[in-house]
Image 1 (cartoon, rainbow, N blue to C red):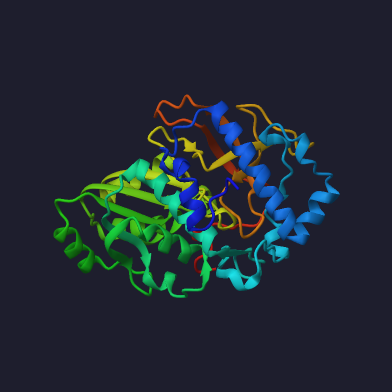
Image 2: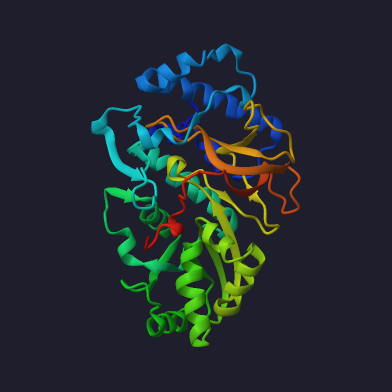
Length: 367
């Protein structure tokens, strides 16, 4: 299989892992993704009876697949309704749960060791494109309590744990009551004053518990050089009329000289994150891709046309989450020609479809 599985499989496909994550041009990548997804789809058909019945109903024929748009997708909502596994249950080492407000069903994603390893490796390759391979001092703009449970991971806790592997001397900036630990944070910054610092957090929580807190106290962190990665729902911020530009300017005004990268991902496809480049565009890596579907007939949209976001990943081998239709709305902006120099498709997210559940990690705190 082309998918990245256990250690032997990772070793056997080392050439792909050694690629720069944004180095593969359109034609080569399309051929690579089609081959991998055909083999991965066959794996899930043979090992997940529920998925096999779905594809049988859809009339799936591998011989008729010539391009990514030909593959059948499943709605991400299915992971809230069914336990979908393509490995024996005893092989599961982590159960990932998506975020959800009170009363909402939450997706369950089952990871075996092979899938978890593949996701971690690919995430590391993607992030190295932005911060290099050297571990840097890291500030988590959250409370340490968010990563408490080591087995039944929430999306928020898993995000923190997954991102922590890029840092050293990790400092949690919020206490158990979601208050900024200002004195300890000041000491930490003094300790690393001559170093580049990585910061990570969830979009709305940074706004609510860091930006607003520092603004109200009239203080700032004055970080001389840092890189902030943030993820999560924008729904509350949009309600407060906070645009990306306003958000970035506000964060810099209280934190200092930061390069800010929003990124997009979901519990159902961990590792296949889409990071915002210096030009403000979300990018697909060699391990993932995106299609936009017309909501009327689910045909594949052209560049610039708006529709439902479909995400494709070569990573999930323990569950059939490799081709998912999301509840997000967006459009592909181009391919291989972003001014940042990264190859692959780049796109813009435009929001959630109407009547879709709120499901951002940072939208769910305190509800």
